[in-house]
Structure formats: structure tokens, C-alpha cells
Image (cartoon, rainbow, N blue to C red; front, side, top):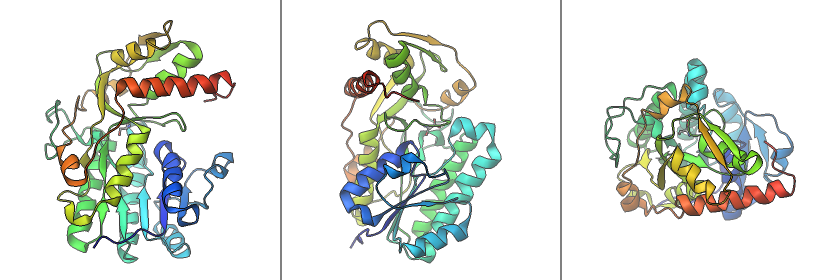
Length: 326
Ligand code: SER
């Protein structure tokens, strides 16, 4: 029998995914059962979470323990991480937050005999040796970025906790996530979000990867659905646990610009690749997610055209109201 999740803590709750995950979980499980935590200082944005908030540095195991005990937490969505570009600027910090932070979360979850833990992974686990098209679920993982290395380790550690300690840990390999509420920070796929803000506001964007750079991407509603659906699945259905491939859409930077132009005809995109091109070049074009479809019924709702239409609509509305601040 899969146990019920009663008291849920989210780390990285002010980040791109965390901030929207809080709303979805609040709707689903009730605000009094959700605790948002982050290393960022509480600000105006935390009040919009409408759930309790605690400052938490995941590299401090004692702090995790205290909060978990105080709120009787039985489930953790561990969303805090340093992304690829920031991770390459400061690999030691990326190791500390992503490796020690994840280890601390898993250890506290084990000690407290928690119901379930979500540890997200990323397409950054892949590498030049990995097949780039329809990248298989079980394949070569030899990432060249510290971020990718920490994500492979997170997957292995999660699987270890499942097999060795019987802790229910789950996770999927997110592609680039596109959203309009909280900006991503320090990732390689950030261009696919920035391009919308700049197109709506300035009708011009200088993209930091080449126009033929093709990467897997996903719209936020699907990203949240993946987390919730995977966590709600009966444990006995799962053959894999951490690191499920999840596919939604794949497009080149140029195809994205062309799609935006359909809505904003005078939009102009230029391309000036920087160091992030090197990271993108080691990641796949498309992902084979048949294991996720088979084991927990994964199915995305948005493709390039429906995602772009919604992004432009929401951001244009905000711009008209004079609220497109970033
Ligand atoms: N969005 C992430 C990054 O670019 C990939 O998981 O770092």
C-alpha cells in the first residue's frame, strides 16, 4: 500500500519551479499541510505563497531536522539546486548545495521514516557519448558540468536509499522549463524563457546559444503535473524511481523565435553564443520517455505552439498592465 502524504515540505520554494509547485500542492493538499522553505530571504513574494515559510539552508542538516520535527513533515519536494551555468562559475558551491544538500535531505527523511521524497534530476545528466535523439532511459551518463555530475549522483543516491533503506524516493529528469511566474536563475536553458519577456517588452532578443541549438523543453503546467503524478503513483508500479526521462517538446532556438514571430511579427532575434553553448552542446535533442509513460502514465499537455501562444498571451497582458518587471 502506498502511504498518504500528509505534511509536505518544499525546499527551494521561491525558485522557478518551487514557487509554482507551492500553489499546486496548496490547492491539492490544503495550505495548512504545506511548508515552503528557501535560502532566499523572505520578501513580498513569500506572502503570495499563502503557506507557512521557514528560512532553510539545505547544507545544514540540523536545520532540516529542526524544521521537519517542528512541522511533523512526512514528505519533501527537494527543489533547491544550483543550476548549470552558476554551477560552472562556482563548482564548489554547486557540489556543496546539490550533493550535501540532497544527502542531508535523504538522511533526515530516512531517520524520520518519511513517507516519500521527490528529488528532481535533469537532462544535464547526459553527455556527448549519450545517443542524442530519443535518448534512452538507461544509457551513458558522463556529464561534463558540475551540475550534471551532481544530478547523476543525486539519482544514484536516491536509488540507493530506495534499495538500501526502503525510503520511497522519486524523481524525473527535467528538460528546460518554460514559465511566466518566477524567472529561472543560472541555467543553460534560461534563454527559452528570457526570449518571451524580451520579445513582449522590447521586440528584440540576443540569444546566448546558436540558432540551431535544439534541446528538450517543457511548459510549467506539465512540469508540475509530472511531479504530482509521479508522487501520486502506487510504489509497486515503479521499476525505476529517480531519474525518469520525461519528454514534452523539442525545438531549436530559431524555431522558437519563428513561433514567437507568429504572435509578435516585428520580433527580431540575434544569436551570440557564450560559454553556455558548450553545456547545451552536450545535452540531447529529444528524449525517450516510454518508461515514465508505462510506469506512471506520464503524458504532457503542451507542445511548442500551445506553450508559445499561452506565454505570449500572459506576458502581453502583464505588459499592458505595466507589470512586466524582471
Ligand atoms: N534548466 C537546467 C539548466 O539549464 C537544466 O536542467 O541548468
